[in-house]
Amino acid sequence: MKNILITGGAGFIGSHAVRHFVKKYPDYNIINLDKLTYAGNLSNLRDVENSSNYFFIREDICNYDAVKKIFSGETLLSNKSFKNICLPVDGVINLAAETHVDRSIKDPFVFARTNVLGTLTLLQCAKETWQGNYEGHLFYQISTDEVYGALELEGGFFTETTRYDPHSPYSASKASADHFVRAFHDTYGLPVVITNCSNNYGPYQFPEKLIPLFINNIRHNKPLPVYGTGQNVRDWLYVEDHARAMDIVFHKGVPGSTYNIGGFNEWKNIDLIKVVIKTVDRILGRQEGASLKLITYVKDRAGHDLRYAIDSTKLEKGLGWRPSLQFEEGIEKTVKWYLENQEWMDNVTSGEYERYYENMYGNR
Ligand code: NAD
Ligand code: TYD
Image: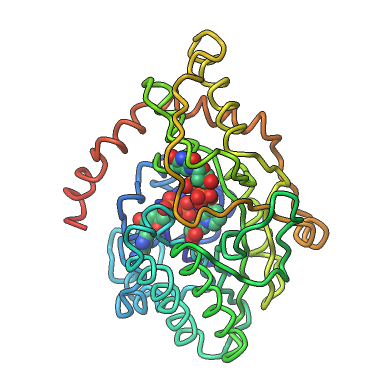
């Protein structure tokens, strides 16, 4: 495969995936298709944006006509600023999505549109472009552990055979997308793989999600809103380990298969929050525990899933992937990154980057 379409490449995980593939595979053309919603930020990709094997197209994955032209290569061929000619898309890694559970509770429609109809649009374009000649092609859907529902505190792990049981509008939309992906495999023979990953953390995550939000709030001595009792459990994976897993699954995954991705790294929210507080306080030279007073218990999230925990044995034994970072190391790197990149954080929280890209690309 030469021409790889990565959707949602300006977002948190997508930018790490794009960076990984652009740097590791100079002979591939990496096409980043992103609508640049509030969560998309091209400054996440500054270090690769001038690479000769990197192409950015601002587009909505729901726009069938535009996506079709991207698949055929027409869009790139007609754009003189793209030096390398890039003919049909050979492989797709679909990360574009609305991703925040709290937003999905407030406005589920955009989740159904992007996550379900957008994925369906990509599937249809892949099918029509490849026309049954599936050799050397792959549609890789990036999914989440949240589609499996919730576990009891002592309730084992999600495996690849756990029944889908989504509870939030976000997870329902992702589950629905995954069903379409499987349906295209079973009905049309489209070569697909799906991975269900646990919570990611690391640089470039939009600060509406727990870890970057709390790092920023601690820095500015703002309250830390802990939902409910703080006893909910999440399973955390450093984002670059997810990008490496994607590389392995993209190249070695068996079409028609699902793989779970996770680092066997469960944390109760309140315990994780205390680790983040301790790390930020230490790096900022504050007295140990000084920011614990910022913890503020607030009303619980509606339908808040109690526990997620991923069993990734299939990926580890079958394809040889292992997480490379211990959590202590990952959280240290992450806290340092946010504290050292205050300008990135300020731009994101002030909406500065949105205005910048509006000027460049027009209104969203
Ligand atoms: P994110 O919200 O940081 O980024 C999403 C990206 O998709 C943004 O760049 C946005 O502009 C783009 N996008 C949104 N709607 C679009 C549309 N209609 N057309 C084109 N682009 C659009 O998300 P993330 O946290 O990086 O998650 C990426 C993927 O990984 C998602 O599919 C998510 O479900 C999945 N996932 C995330 C996690 C996690 O912990 N963040 C865990 C498992 C799986
Ligand atoms: P989040 O980062 O939104 O990821 P997800 O809901 O997809 O797992 O939240 C992680 C956990 O932290 C989740 O149990 C909700 C909780 N949480 C808070 O307690 N306070 C907050 O302000 C946020 C954003 C999340």
